[in-house]
Length: 241
Image 1 (cartoon, one colour):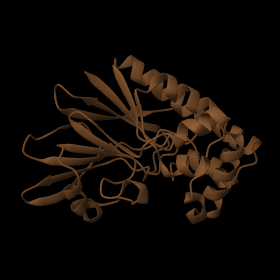
Image 2 (cartoon, helix red, strand yellow):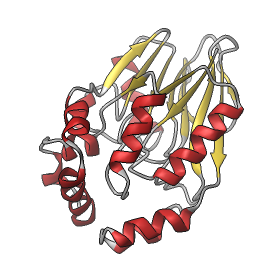
Image 3 (cartoon, rainbow, N blue to C red):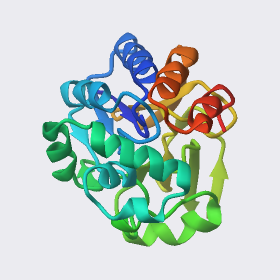
């Protein structure tokens, strides 16, 4: 079975709709969302409605927690904090309660999934490079852990020789190695590629494919500006930064 792995939608409806169309075209039978459905973007309720309809597993991200009453916004930068406060006021009570009921991590046989890191899922640690990734392998036993949070797609491969970074392309898992895979961001990529990103996991074959999807960036930007959210949250969508 093929499983689509999405993360960091960040209330970008145009990106989410484009990704879901791409998921359907590729025949994925299951969709997992690894957190941060909201924050930054201007369509939190619309995105949550779609995510709740389409995703079989949904995890909590730090922006989801901040928008639904968690303490995270106090540690955000000014732009992220402004978006979190706006989102908190904009969410419907039903969507707010839904976010409060989510967990930041879950095991879905045979893999482990978390928004940020397996070591401390609610501390929202960042795994940017192989030095960040190396100590994380002791905190899960599964062959692979899938994450989001950094908005930067990546593969970290652990073997007896140590941990190495692999570029986010198609990969067949080696049966003797273990992996941490960052699935990238649907709604706010930060790897200098503005296209939405997700991972297609073929569980029977044991391989993954990173998929990039163009979407109507100008429409998403227009909604952010119309909501009077910080201007940088709109402009960065065009550059993937």
